[in-house]
Amino acid sequence: GLKPNKAIYSVLDAVINILRSFPFIILIVSIAPLTKLIVGKSIGQTAAIVPLTIAAAPFVARVIESALKEVDKGVVEAAKS
Image (cartoon, rainbow, N blue to C red):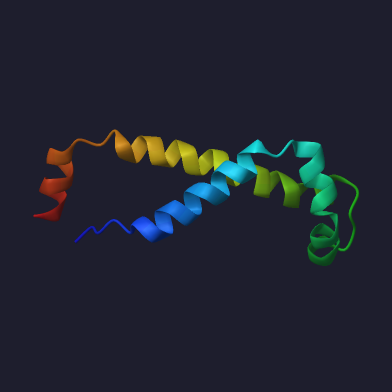
């Protein structure tokens, strides 16, 4: 069945809220060593993919969360059965 996990939810919720509040330019600068480790350089189009992905993840998570909250409880119950 579907079981909510409040501990994991609260941790992910805090991380997502922190990442959403970071301005993008600060995120690029703070992730530069990680970008250089992953891509091999910290400037350019290829290097921009890493911070863009990290910056987009919290927004996608919020969209998915709101979509899942809108699902009717009857639909969830029908899916369980």
